[in-house]
Length: 185
Ligand SMILES: CC(C)(COP(=O)(O)OP(=O)(O)OC[C@H]1O[C@@H](n2cnc3c(N)ncnc32)[C@H](O)[C@@H]1OP(=O)(O)O)[C@@H](O)C(=O)NCCC(=O)NCCS
Image 1 (tube, rainbow, N blue to C red):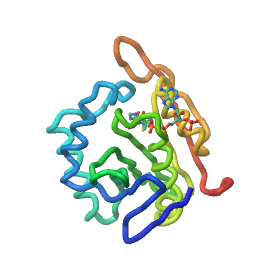
Image 2 (cartoon, rainbow, N blue to C red; image 1 turned 120 degrees about the vertical axis):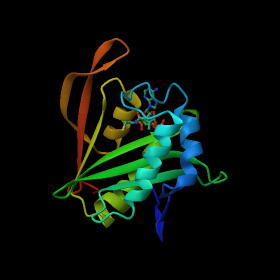
Image 3 (tube, helix red, strand yellow; image 1 turned 60 degrees about the horizontal axis):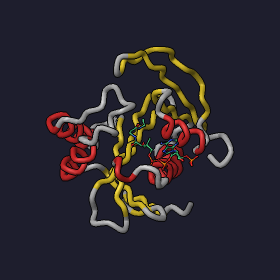
Image 4 (cartoon, rainbow, N blue to C red; image 1 turned 90 degrees about the vertical axis):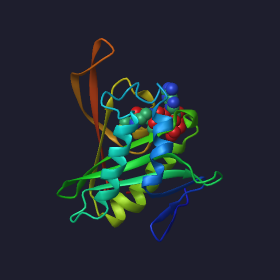
């Protein structure tokens, strides 16, 4: 997949990724209000006040040194600049980080998340940030997320049984790992 990295902007075939900004609150709130968004995320922030706080903290993080978190807003290059999703990396120390991602529910199933995640891993996590290990977590029921991680070279390393109570039942959490040293980074 060709990726163009220019002055902080990452471009893939269909997407542009840039730092999250305060103007994105409205777009985030709109898609997070869709009930499908939080289906597999026990601690999803969906209320306006929480989305705003989340974005403010993410923007403030840009000026923190050392910077420990990175949030990239995803735009459809054919669109009008709306934020249709996010990819985030949190540094865990010693060359390791954790990746998270989300796409607006009305854009699910078109491969956007996979395209954005791969660009961030190659051009940011394993390049600019120099990470050697990238962790990812999701609920075992989150099939799209698990498919994406496996397809993108992550290995399932551990399952934490029954650690999230959601909709009347206890759900397992899966932990995945991708190593920069492995094939193709
Ligand atoms: C997980 C999420 C980001 C996937 O977004 P997406 O743009 O639809 O993902 P993609 O289109 O790149 O598809 C990812 C993989 O899941 C598969 N998939 C998508 N929807 C699926 C479904 N309902 N059932 C089974 N597989 C599915 C795709 O076929 C693809 O696998 P492939 O590459 O082997 O073909 C999206 O569902 C989302 O934002 N969910 C809420 C937030 C979340 O759960 N984030 C993950 C926790 S960090």
